[in-house]
Image 1 (tube, rainbow, N blue to C red):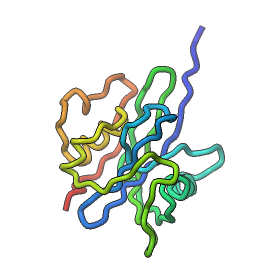
Image 2 (tube, rainbow, N blue to C red; image 1 turned 45 degrees about the vertical axis):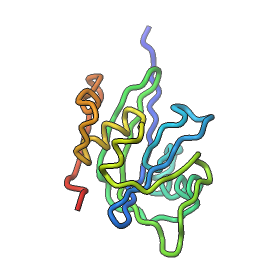
Image 3 (cartoon, rainbow, N blue to C red; image 1 turned 120 degrees about the vertical axis):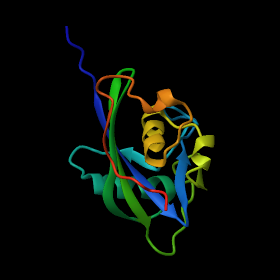
Image 4 (cartoon, rainbow, N blue to C red; image 1 turned 90 degrees about the vertical axis):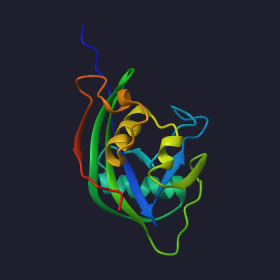
Length: 158
């Protein structure tokens, strides 16, 4: 009997201001609780990536965003499900300040400071490749044949 593995499409925002990137911490009730990530969320059936990202940023950090182009696309197999993660550049609309509405906390960090935060595997491998982080060489290598980084545009560090 073949097991069907659910695929979950997740969109994330790469938001940069003055050389720092916005990251958020998962709530204690979330899957992979307490880990950090770029602000993100699931795409609902019939929803575009852009609409999902705008909705998720409003729900999680209380801001409206302008969604730019895709920066990275990664597929990662977790136990029991597969996450398709698409990272988009995004900008917070003027005169808004993110706040932890649907997340435990948020921080503005430099690419070097990202090494101090624990991310879920799919997010960590993407950050490693985007920013040249080498916390653990095994994190940037696919753990399963289906794990792949389909697209990465560098450099992100100015």
